Amino acid sequence: MTRLEVRKAPTSLPMQFRGEALNSSINTDARTVTLAFTTGSAVRRLRYTGWDTAVPFDEILVVSERAIDLSRMNAGAPVLDSHSRWSTFSQVAVVDRAWVEGSEGMCTIRFPKPGIDVAADRMFGLVSDKIIKNVSVGYSIDKIRIEEAQKKGDVEKIFVERWTPNEVSFVTVPADPGAQVRSSEATFPLLIGEPDSHLIRATRMRMAEAALRLA
Image (tube, rainbow, N blue to C red; front, side, top):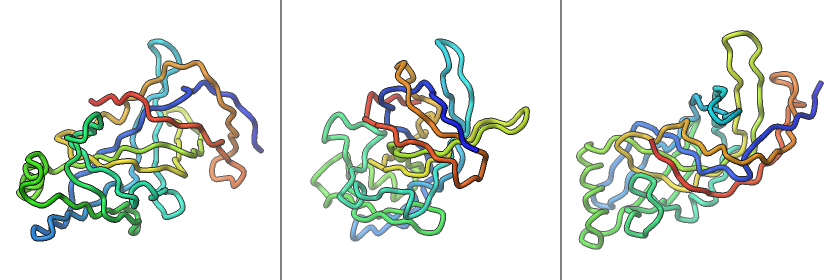
């Protein structure tokens, strides 16, 4: 049985971040790197319920061809230095191709030719020498499914059933997965049912990129 519940939610959420250890295949001649930008593992986040109170929940990214909208990635998404998107000088590479392989979201990125950009040359050298070992994906959430906590000690689980990667970043320490802006008093309707029921549906939320906040 489902019920309609109205929850407080921001009018727009900031772009979300997830970090992954860099497990890559590097082609030094073509200056390309093939890497996994997501494995879909659960991440503990916070849902703010007041000025100074928050409720923890687990966010699980669903990794499948149906779940991930790769249109932006395959249109040449930027590869950035530490999620900095305020200047073209922060872009060090470009996504050539993205796809889903098993339980991982994969992509091949390409750096510019040597000598074109000092920052890109530096990053490619650090990645090739395995000095920079972490990547992080910036993504927007398009559709969610919620499973409420069933017993004491459990936390609510939010399954992100549709999401869009917007960029990939090389980072030293992945951005804090719990860093989110929760200031608006806007609400949206949400259908909640029994866990694992086909009746569980979450409405599509309107998303817009907002200010980014790093750990």
